Length: 160
Ligand code: HEM
Image (cartoon, rainbow, N blue to C red):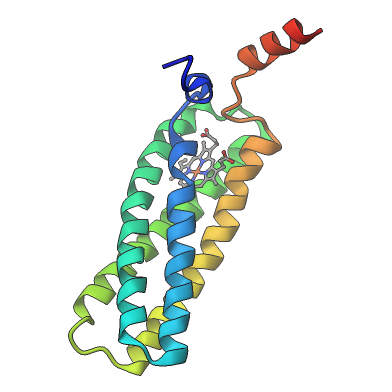
């Protein structure tokens, strides 16, 4: 694996592989639901719902890998950031599951009002997601969580 995927070999956990999928898919679902409301389009709504389903599936894997990654967070101030990230992302995931259930049961008698309600849910999801994912990025870029420090320092030594 090393020669082909040196990045993966150096990774300390699998969370970063999954994180981008729910972010991209949930935000794309929001975009399609916005189109659905603006154009009164059932097709755009259906597309939004399928993308939301996929994003929530990816979100489940992201939550599982995140819970495994938890132990690698350094002690100190990073722990508070991790708790905030965890709480907001678990809330986001629960909201996404709720929206999936809502979309599934509303699929037969869809009204303009229900589409707007779905849009509101996705706007709230996007807000939570943005806040929570930023705390995840803070863990990596400010506190160096999940950085393979021994490998990075070894590389630094060989470059000197
Ligand atoms: C849908 C759910 C989640 C999303 C979208 C998400 C997103 C992110 C993002 C964007 C990062 C920064 C990664 C990078 O820049 O490489 C991150 C890091 C991190 N997240 Fe999450 N996260 C989620 C759930 C969770 C949960 C439930 C936990 C449990 C504590 C968690 C723990 C961590 C940890 C420890 C890091 C630091 C990097 C690492 O160890 O891999 N995440 N997350």
